[in-house]
Amino acid sequence: MTQTRTRALLRVDGEDHELDLDHRTSLLDALREHLGLTGSKKGCDRGQCGACTVLLDGRRVNSCLLLAVAVQGREVTTVEGLADGERLHPVQEAFVACDALQCGYCTPGQVVSAVAVQQEARDGWPSAVTEDLTATEVLLDDVEVRERMAGNLCRCGAYTGIVPAVLGSLR
Image (cartoon, rainbow, N blue to C red; front, side):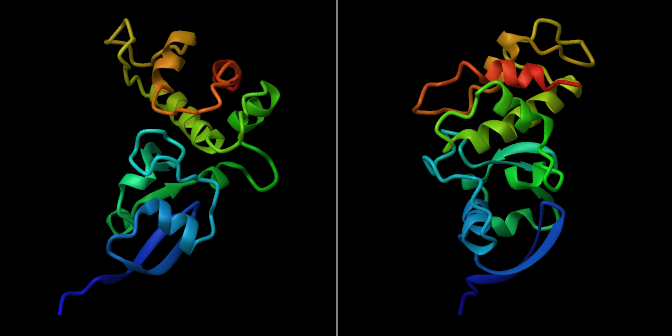
């Protein structure tokens, strides 16, 4: 008989969780249904809208496209894990200050992506619009932020506060 379940050890927001998972369980479903972390949203379930974005070893991924058993031994950070206790992450604070929250459904994915965008720029990862491909750090501006956040879509279309929030929260 073929085994269809696995005891998987997931490290999420700094805590280890041992879960009995069907091999087909997406990371998003493991987070939401097994761990009760509902910040990451199930939008398109096809990796097109970014509502399910989480950080995997510090890099953003669409959690609906990954199998939970495949991320064992790696660090998953959700929108819930960005805050330090009651203190919001600077990007979360900037989203509030810049009224970049939209309807709330896609906001967690937008916030997680914005955190990753800032790290990608610090690490010198170029985007499709980066002019200096030899730079060790990419300076974020409106064009860079828009390009890098293009993987997060919202039906609200209320994007006007996001670029100021991403740029305003840079340290």
